[in-house]
Image (cartoon, rainbow, N blue to C red; front, side, top):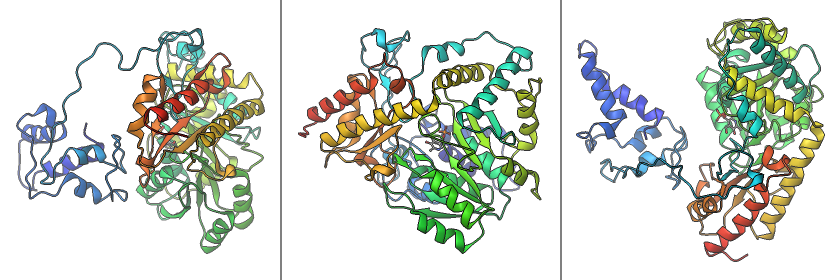
Length: 497
Ligand SMILES: Cc1ncc(COP(=O)(O)O)c(C=O)c1O
């Protein structure tokens, strides 16, 4: 597998010197063989004089000081490609996995409690999460026009339901639902609420703050990061000091950082910003919190909460979802320069969203009717019960899990109870143990956990996601099974509590 960065480098390296009219086809072949070496048998080694892939990537990755052992490639960790090279920079081929027509994974006995879906291991990573049957069935709606009245009505209802989910009744608040993943929310903030040269204060509780900062910088925003030690969050007095140092256009905070399970205190933070730096917009990355953590958009005076469909909301991935305050929309309208994105520009999307909510057919770019219908179903389910009850259910499940973790003699990354998320738990493994010692064994027991993601300690911990139907559906045994399986897998790996 080749990362986007590697592909980018391959393109750069393959570019002909200026003035050389290299045949486009030769250029393409060269790029192709570098990007897809497995398809070009002759291209298996890299000249030793050329710097290794790791050192080349290091040029623009701030996180490549070590080679974590996990097989997960991100723009900040390139362990898979690093593994594939020997000391001389020669590319080692990995054996291809055998072709299979049956799903990979253990035979999971079909239980009534596992819904009507084919038997499968319970997906208990911090998103995507398990889906309810009705949500999945909404995805198989017959094809319909994206500007037809039936679909426009659904879209309008979805936008109104989002107001309820985010707890805003202010008519000036503006929901957005745009095809894309959570990352598109960062791009929307950077492209619409900041202008090149503006300052942003990014509060750092893990991996996702680095990425949000990187995104802001991509749009020419000047970023200051306020970092907390792993497992902690920047303290309010530190934030206050930072806010007094310069004028920030935006403050961003990750409500739950999915790499650490650290929960930020949004209400107190927003109060602080409004007191010390009232013009600064408060932007919350709620990708791993909306639907599982309490968020009161109006009461807490938030300016943006951005999220995605696939976590606490319990819908398949593919939708970027935002709630934006009236004052943020005013700030957008007052910008001196045009938005620095085309697809993500609110100049394009704002009238569309307003029309949809008024049930008027509109078009800027084609939405996905099936995903929007799935979102409508999941929102209807979520809002069929009081939101406080939903948050209480997540808290109760989380407490049960955290107690089980502590009874096992294990520690969480987020050591202080007030820093602990309710929709996920990041758990340090016993000394000397790494995620591959337990994750495959958990899978055999029908449970999927995630490995570590924080680059400094990725090999030392695992992540357990507990959001959505796995928590709220009383018919499901996902959480109990996961706790039992964790105990057994640790025992099988030689750990005694
Ligand atoms: C806190 C947080 N922010 C942003 C993202 C990016 O979202 P996506 O992967 O949907 O683009 C994630 C993804 O897990 C996340 O956990």
